[in-house]
Length: 217
Image 1 (cartoon, helix red, strand yellow):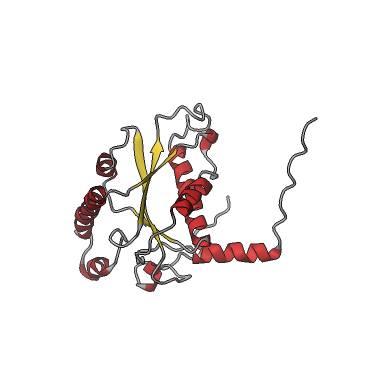
Image 2 (tube, one colour):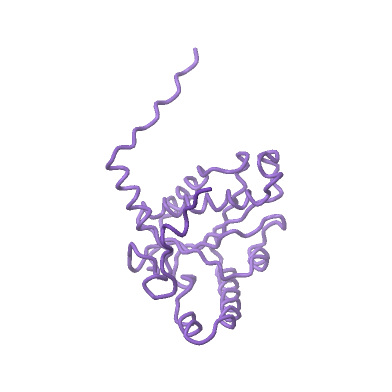
């Protein structure tokens, strides 16, 4: 006898409001408290991230918890070098503002999580990625965002550090050559919380007007 499929949940108006609040309060956090994060919670967040959609059900995400002090120091040094180099691309008031921004929580965040895309994985059998191979990376981004939302539900903040040399980070963490870095995440309790992006509050970039992002053809 075949079991009946599970009944889908009903998402009521209260859930709709809570979900919208979750999206509003999900922020890129750079200021962390040093309180340790429960070991089981990190594993739970990664498990929820693995529920994200992926091209061809390939599930190409690979998560690396960076716990060794020397590897963290090396990543921090790589960030400092890349950040210094990036500053040279700005001039005048924009350069002054860039130099004043706190662009990573590497020093204080209790958890560092590097997220890679395994381009050598046979899972998915090429479905959907033969014509658009970049969709494997997109799948990993979906997993990162799923983890980001899940972390916020549990009172944690996540900061995505992108001012890094991805190949150097791959070497520092000693992972296979066909793994490419998609995200380096800092995770922990935020020092402060806001429903407004920090880069808006600090005058770096306003939100785009809605009419500039939705088009019809």
